[in-house]
Image (cartoon, rainbow, N blue to C red):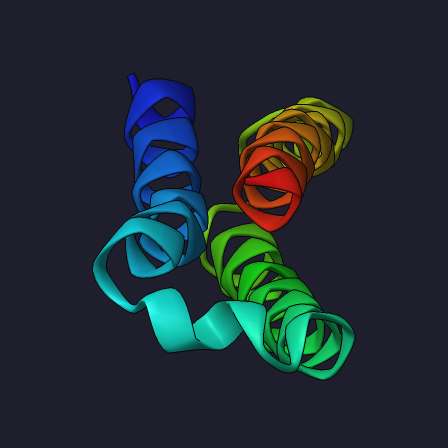
Length: 90
């Protein structure tokens, strides 16, 4: 059950930039700089979140948490890239 809560939290955090691209159209003006800043913030937050989970839950399969956390991050980052690319092309 912990793995589901863990992945839902990461998914919710990864959805924030996607929502920002729809709500704040001024992010398109400096796309690469804004994308880089959002990427670094997401990567740091998810890395800290994975570290906290690993540090607090000693009896769980740690490799499963790491693999699912970062694969979740990669999937949402690709979705964010597709959405931002479509917004830039319009």
